Length: 325
Image (cartoon, rainbow, N blue to C red; front, top):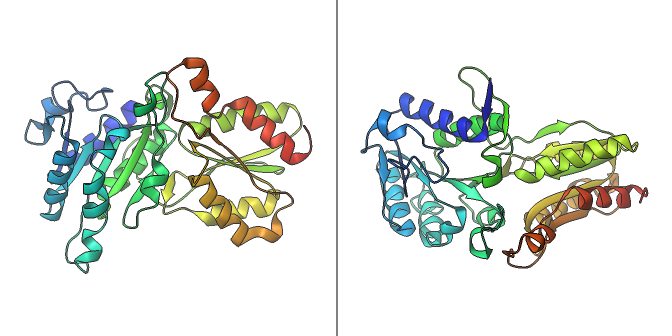
C-alpha cells in the first residue's frame, strides 16, 4: 500500500501498542494534539491517556521517567518534538539509558525508543535544524537509526520497539510527507542491515535519511550522462553494516559519502576510516565526503540551502572522483 512516512510511523507504533500492553508513548503534545507533526494521530482515542501521556516541556524529566519505566519492565516510546531538544535530556540518555545495562552487569535493561524529527527543515533556525546523529553514535550502549523511506521507517521502528536496548530513532522532518510503498501485513526490518537502493558499477554513494533522496536523484541524472552509480542506505547508523558497503566498494572502486551533518568528526569520517581499513586495496581513488558546512544552520533560506548538500554538489563530487568533471 502507498503510505506517507508519517502514516508508516503511526502504523508501526499502533500495531506494536496493540500487540504489547507494556508499550506506552510519552512526550509533549503526543495525546490530544496528536503530536507536533501528527505522527500520533488517533492514539489517545484508541489507547487512552494512561498509555499516551502528554507531558510538560521537561525533556530531561520525561526521558528520565521513561528510563525508569523501562528498567521496571515497560517499553516506553519517547517522542521528542525535535531531536535538538534531546540535548536537554542528554545526561539521561548518555549517563543512564546507555549505561545501565552495562553497569548492572546485564541485570537491568532499558528497552526504550527515543524518536523525533532531526536535521534542517526550511528555516527553523540554528537551534532546531541540527543533525546530531554523530553525537549519539559516539556513545556506547545506544543504537541509532535514520530511515529514509516509509517502508524502512515502519519496519525499523517496529524492530526498535522490540529491541531490549535504548534506540535513538531519527526522522527527518522533511520526510514526513513523502510517500512510498509499505508492505501489507506484519513485517519488521532487522537493525544493522544496510540496503542497496540502486545498483551500479562505476561509483558507490552512501547516504542516509533525507540525503538518500538527494543521492538517488543525483544518480539518476548521472545515469543520463553515462555514469552508473550504486546507492547504499545504511538505515541503521549504529551498529553499522560495513559489510554491505565494503562489498559495493570492492565492485566500484570509488566511494562518495553524503551526510547533512557537520564535516568535522562527522559520521562520514567514521565510514571513510572503516572503508580505508577494510577495503583500501580496492579503492581506485580517495574517498570523497559531501557534508553540511561547519556552521550553525542559518535562518536565511539562501544561506540555509548553501549549508546543506544538494544534488548539484553530489553530482560534482561523483564526476570529480570519476574524472568526468
